[in-house]
Length: 235
Image 1: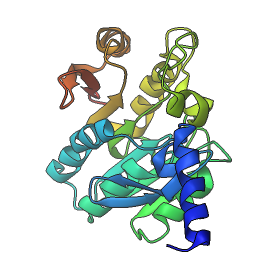
Image 2: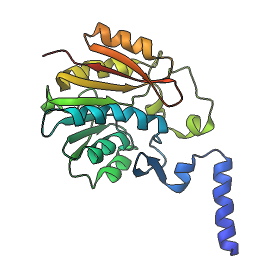
Image 3: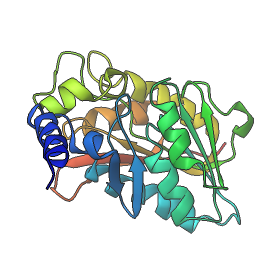
Image 4: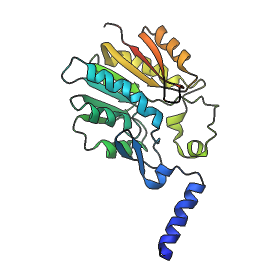
């Protein structure tokens, strides 16, 4: 190893010792079968989300339509949207991201997916043109309560606040998504929401109050509540 190589390695080790996420240092995050470009300004996709997206993929694969529509609201790096687009290639996938820092990462990661449309837009108002057409709406929204500052430095110091915090109880964006997904889904369409392990009951209550059917909370591979699904009633 040359002195230059040793200096570069030391610099990388120092960055990791400062708790910078490994994915920021390498510039790559693995997600299902994908390798995604990530860095400052974008939420690093988590292994737990690999399980959550399966519910959306299953719903798209089971759809009677020849070209079912899946929508990812708040796509971040584009991980969920790209997983749907590549694993259900006959589907049409739409994704929205509002953050000016995260959007370029999503654009880079999804550029080669011909069946994926990415827009720089607020999830509360994106895709008016798709009213009543979607088979699946999925989101991994910010769901950390404002006062619940994460202990891990990798999260607290490097994940963007816009992707983490969801209001006093962490569910402000979930309430918006419940309304928006009702607008976008056809009758019988599926809503998939990722959330914290203690939020399933509260989210089911929100969805039940909004008229959703078959609300159910599902565990991840560590047996923690991680996702809630619901079915849109007939239009």
